[in-house]
Image (tube, rainbow, N blue to C red):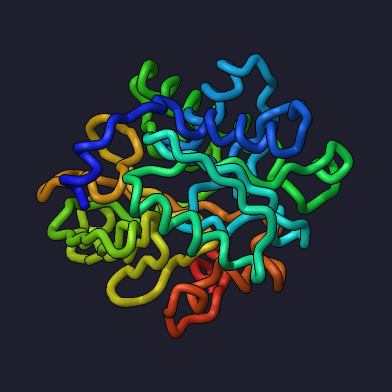
Amino acid sequence: MQARLDAIENQVGEPVQAAFSVLERHLGQSLAAVILGEIGPLSLTEGLSTAARLGKPALDADTVGRAVPEINQHSVKVAGIPLTPIGAATPFGDEMVVTSLGDPSRAEDILRSVAVASRACGVADSPITGAQAKQQGTLVTDSLTLARSIGEAVRTAREADADPVEAARAAGDGYLLFTGTVSDFNWADEDGFLVGDLKLAGSGEFAGQDFATDYKNEHLVARRNGEVVATCPDLISVIDLETYDGINNPDFTRGQAVAVLGFRCDPLWRSEAGLAVFSPRYFGYGLDYVPIEERLTG
């Protein structure tokens, strides 16, 4: 497959922008704004740069409030609004429109298969109205502002020779879950998903303790000394203690000094509809979701 893909010319430099244009042509109208699919290191910049190139505003909102493994973790879907029609485009000039889905969960299967067969797939989904965007629970609002405020707090702390990890924790109203060094990690590409685990040996106040996470693109379950301390849909973030940047899975090195922060998810994910697609049991764990603040204080 890799050899076949290498032999085909990449005709499209920005598949996400191409997918947005595919959707506009299908709808026969110009969309008023860009809404980010998630707050992730690539998807956030993809969304903002697409909006800039198209000359459209980007809303201070997204459909998750964090990064997620699947399109099924989508606030518009949780709100009961169809994701279709969906525009999709590959780097090779292939363009598709998914007009309807027999089951909403099929969006992930269909688009992931295109991405696996094409190395990448740009997607523009959920063309909602302004009225729908304003309804509570359709989008996670002010998410770009929150992300920017956390980054600003870290930058300010570094300039003041203060603790950037504590600054990030405070800005996001989160929790320090662990500090330590990377003792081991494993990963594999499974059907287009990055699946693996991370193991840490404690330092500082956590000396002599251990910590582990499982991830499917994003961290799903975290255990300290074998006891679960955080799960999806709450956010588990691993931070490099030299650069104070978040670490993309699986870009770890053994012996790397890290801190782990946990943050509460948006309330919509704690609803019955949200947990149906974004809980430990959804990903095959025999665990019920317990809010991070309850796990840490219970």
